Image (cartoon, rainbow, N blue to C red; front, side):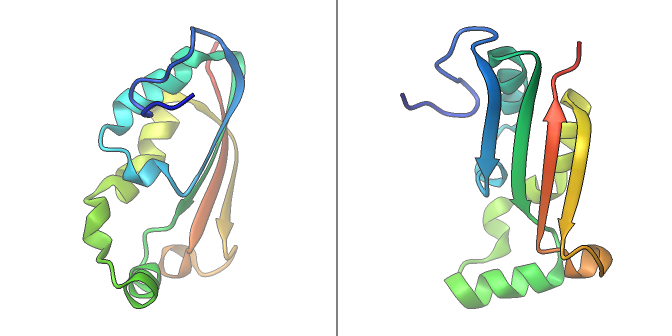
Length: 116
C-alpha cells in the first residue's frame, strides 16, 4: 500500500503503531499528517518518530554529505516536534547526543500516544 502522510489509505483506528524515520520533515502539511496519523491509529495507539535535529552542526553535515541545503526543509524541522506534541501525548523524548543542547543535537526521537 502506498500513500502520502496527509491522506493515509487506512480505515479509522486501523493501526496500533506508526513509525517514521527521517521522513516527517519532508511532509509539506504537517498538521494534516498529524490528523491522519491520529485518525488511523486506534485509541491509545503509538507514534514513533526519529527526525534530524535543528542545529548549525546538522546543517553543515547535511551540506557536506549531500550537497543539499537545509532550506529544502523550509521551516518544517522547527515546526515538526511542536506540531506533533499538539496532536499527541508525549511518552518519551530522546536527543542524540544526549548532551550539548540544541547546538549539537543531531537527532530527536519521540514516542507519542493518541489522546483519549
